[in-house]
Length: 297
Image (cartoon, rainbow, N blue to C red; front, side):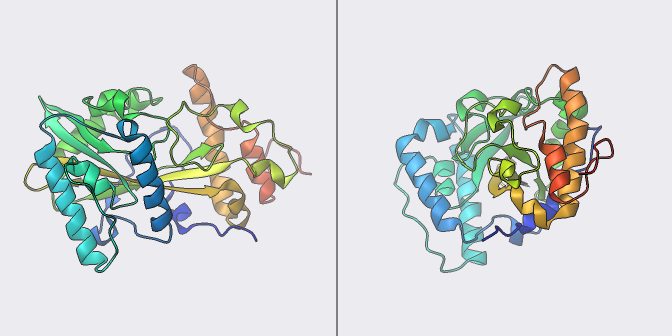
């Protein structure tokens, strides 16, 4: 049976660059703040295992972050009670940091950002499903420092993001979505980024070469907390096989164009593409719209 394309594909930004990065934020209806779906039981069980076996890798907090963390936990509890009354909640051990406790009850990863000496700093986080990063490397660092490894971030987003955090209003939460290409469907993946080689060579013309290609998207929200003024950043990670795009030709074509536009800019920075170089051609062949420079088969 063929996988059904997920509805979140409609929200993925796929405009070719430049610019390569954008805030891409939208006004958030608080009814959509968190996501509760048929993956809840599976993902909470996966979180529980990671928290038991790799707690120091997936949870960290700075001293003094407990007050704002309690506000995060309160917001999560209130939202679940209002929007999903009667939803079974897993038991939470006593004595946990409030962000750790809150993270055990939702499918999202939770990051707490507080303003310290004029900079927005990551002060606590529960991140069980990282996409090629580790909390220990980010805790206590500013938004700019956290995103420093991202190509084009300094030139295109740094000043805008810093200003955005400072101007975010309690009554105006926002959401955004991103997309990355992975060679696996695992949610817990803190290791370095994919390279073209990590996907194998592919067998162009054979649909099976997409079997090892996955689309990974993060539904992210930013919400300022009224008492502390801190910002809670939620990350809901969702994954689907790239082969579903056979039923979404417009998305496949747009993604191919986006990937083609990324490669030269990365090369100019000395960076490698985090996806197989054959993927744009393969996506276009999948839906029967080969790139203009490629001969029709």
